[in-house]
View 1: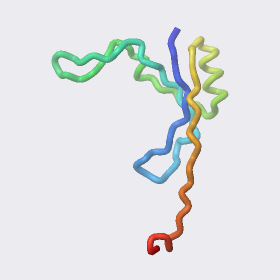
View 2: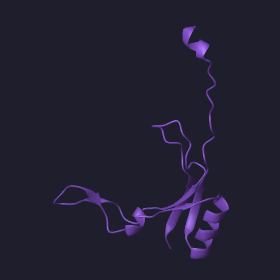
View 3: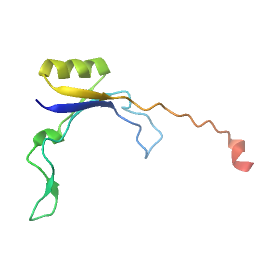
View 4: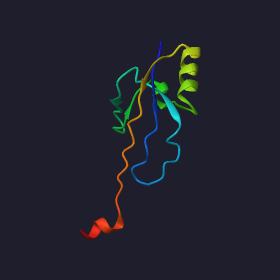
Length: 93
C-alpha cells in the first residue's frame, strides 16, 4: 500500500503573489532510497511514484481520492500566515 502526504502549497518565496496557494497537493513518499547513477552521478531510483504530484481544490477532495484509491495518507497542516504590517514612514525612524 503506497504512502502519501497531503499538504497545501506554500507561497513562493521569490514573489509576493499567492497564486495556487489555495490548492491541496497529494504527493507520494519514496518507496526506496535514491542512489547516484554511475555514469552521470545524478540521483535516481526505480520508483516512478516519486514523480507524481496530484492537485485538488479542497482538502476533502484530496482525502476522498486517497481513501477511494486505498492510499495511506497523512495531512500536513498549512502554517499560519504571518502578516508583517509596516508603514512607509517606518523606514525613516
